[in-house]
Amino acid sequence: MKKIAIMTAGGDCAGLNSVIKAVVLSAADKKIKVLGIQDGYIGFVEKKYIKLTKSDVYDIEKMGGTIIGSSNKQCPFHYPVAGKNNEYEDRVEESIKALKKQGVEGLIVVGGDGSLDSARVINDAGMPTIGIPKTIDNDMSASMPTIGFETAVENSVQAIRNLKATAYSHRRVFVVEIMGRTSGYLTLYSGFASGADIILLPELDYDLKVVCNKVKQIMKSGKRYVIIAASEACKEKGKEETISKILKDSFEQKRYGGIAEKLASQIEEITGYESRAMVLGHLQRGGEPIMSDIILGARLGNYALNLLLEGESGYIVGTKETALVKVKFPKTRKPRILELDKDDIAITAKDMGISFGV
Ligand code: F6P
Image (cartoon, rainbow, N blue to C red):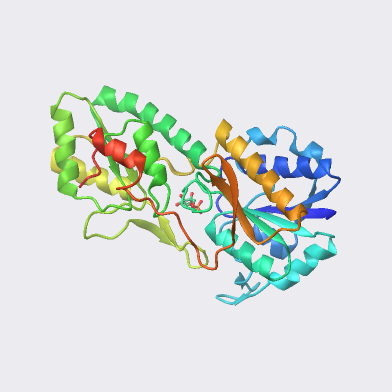
């Protein structure tokens, strides 16, 4: 193999640049050229490529985001037809041909489950491909943790610590809205590590009465504030999720948002305690990666490259305990489900008296 390409697709996260750096340096060491595909599947289809050399990647591991860009709505086999509304076409074969014309013999896709599903299609269509899982949601079964998760937890913990100071001063209840879509990992870990009093997860519908009683109990006990870590997709028993927008042209059609505002106003009305909402939003995803994401990104990048060079493809790489592992691209998505009765952090939180609102 003389030339490979790399793409980052889906929502960005911390640690992507570490993957890129590892792939570029490791390839350079073996005299292999690397082409960066810009902006995820947009660049794949629209043929937006950049050469990546050693001098492009010095020190990038410390930077958040991805130097080659990303996009999280486009799918190469269901790609919008230019100038037409609601018309889509399969652009995979033509895009592979264009890459091969550039001399590319293998592809590394760093992405979430939707992006890696497209990577499977590309591999099956004739471009040897390896997928690397990344998501702040930590819901991909191929790797525990996924690239970006631990930095997002750290960012959320720092933010909640800051909130605690102002919550304490003003005797307030804060509902903190945390990303993760329908997976509660980010909320559970962030809430637990920041010492939240109540953690509300998509995996367990909460009872508003229980939440309000817990708030009253905490405030009456002499503690001056309450922190509620609420996943963006958590919901009250018997009610619907809070959605800010439906995105018709996206892999993930629901854009969550608004639960913190809604819950804070309900809590204030029922308990009488001043309650505020704080949406952490994309601040969780941005910022510099912590050490563990830098290391994880580099290990998986190097592993993916070596597999391609050994003639292996069609795999998603990840980690299991301390080992690097590979699994065949699944035909259907296999998300990792947070099982609250088995997850050690959830059990510890419950034993420590943290409420799940039930
Ligand atoms: O899947 C990653 C994620 O950050 C989710 O946690 C969040 O709901 C979503 O992406 C936000 O996506 P966007 O940046 O497109 O609004």
